Length: 367
Ligand SMILES: [Zn+2]
Ligand SMILES: [Zn+2]
Image (cartoon, rainbow, N blue to C red; front, side, top):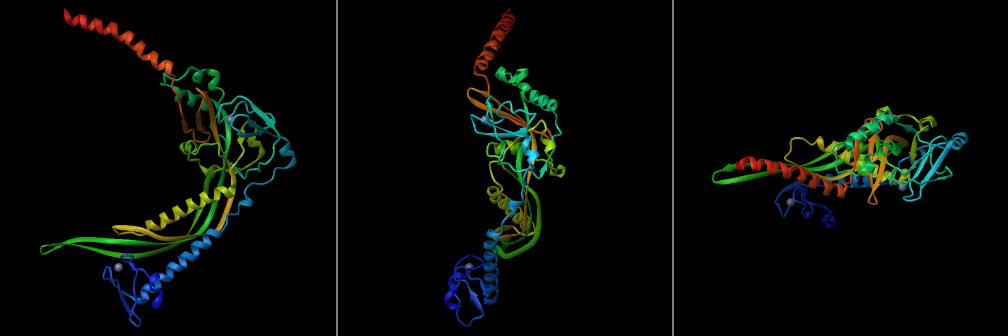
């Protein structure tokens, strides 16, 4: 053990510990704390095991190949694809539906193309909100925005809102998690003329098995995460097995981020949530700091789902402004420009009205 002393650190202050051969205890030269050698060795062994498991966790893969399935030949025949000549978005719909304009950039020329390269989803959350709901929500959203350019509020513009399914990868996992925390209890008291601060350090190790269901990661690069997050959550309890019938009359955004690419984000979310759960069980301390953690997937299942949104993008001064509504819950998000000519006009109008009023008030006071 003697020459490996550098690897052993004081659990209290982190300084390197120097072991004296044959001694059962070791004293930290920096903070003067005395430890049992066997306790230090055990702690070190635990750390090594956690590190080994963390490395193993990096290797455990999600079963991304199982997500989605192939369309039957008949189903594929009824599907059409359109691509936006301006931003490259690719939308899929059934043979009786048209992508009239690009939902992402507002470009009105969508070019038909052969349908291919999209898997059949496993699940779908069906639309609950109708077009009338979406139009009403949009009008409500515009209400009170007097400076909004009039091409936004025109009736035919409002009616152009389209229903679209957004692709999501859902990650289910069963994991074994373990983490080490360095916790402290701090007590201050007076002894004679001295104020004494006593800090007790505890090494807390926690381990648990957990399961996570349907951690969503969106599979569309075109869809802005900030927008999507604003209209979340979706109630995944209402997921139903997908059938092509759900596409009738609706658009579907073709995913452009694969399940494998999304897996890193899913792993990060699982790991953070697992560590939070473990941390919440370290109770009754004044401080608690994570030292190391290992999360190992025992099962990692991935499915491909579609969630419903109503979406409309209107361009103004060459910039796209998007309005979106959660097609299940009705939650909305949007951005609005303002019309600078109207902005100049309004104060002018106001002063035209105000000047005679002021004049009248002043003249009353003068009398
Ligand atoms: Zn020390
Ligand atoms: Zn576009």
